[in-house]
Length: 304
Figure 1 (cartoon, rainbow, N blue to C red):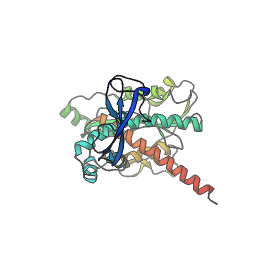
Figure 2 (figure 1 turned 90 degrees about the vertical axis):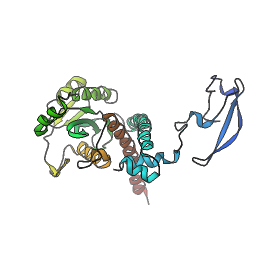
Figure 3 (figure 1 turned 60 degrees about the vertical axis):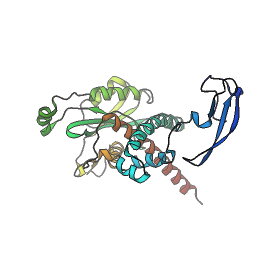
């Protein structure tokens, strides 16, 4: 009865709750404590207040979470864990909600442990929903040298280049929400970054204006963008030393690990909000991986 603090029906305090036996939960083979309220007679259990309440297949959560951040599509994950693809779609939303809360806590823990963030790299990732004629932009900010994402947004933009005329003919004029997305991201960054933070950006003309608007005391350095080292992988550069390596490596990793963002794939995004959910889960797993690597290197360093 450690996790139970009140009755879900009458809100009676813990002093009015008594143990009322156990039951075996077949889903994960655990014995769950039953609880009874002396005031209203309501019976419930320790599982009532857990995030997995009423889930039928709790065992698959960690596997689905890891697979979504390991370049597997929902249909393959459903086949691997033995459930319907609709279950994976529902768990994607549920895992993303938990990931957003965990990512905020992890970022605050990093700032408390390592101090204020001094340097940030910022750039946009371009992808699409359903077809190349419906492009999306994903502005992302990462900590320089650490590659921990600070935040991102997903926004629709009009098609450009040779596809612009085709897009207008097929789908009409497409609204540009990139400015609102970047503004929302920088508003969120104001809560976690110091006023005198330093930004590293490429030659995009809007980035300096964003920095001056939301961080008047901040400084920034513009580094010219170079050609990609692999066809279709513009985030990995040919140059021997990449000044924007942290953000370019982070964006390349997202493309490699989030299946719907691969350059040449039929697992395309159908809804921008689901793309945002998927990236939230990837960031959650990424931070866990970086923390694991850091602890492993520390153990190797202190090994006699």
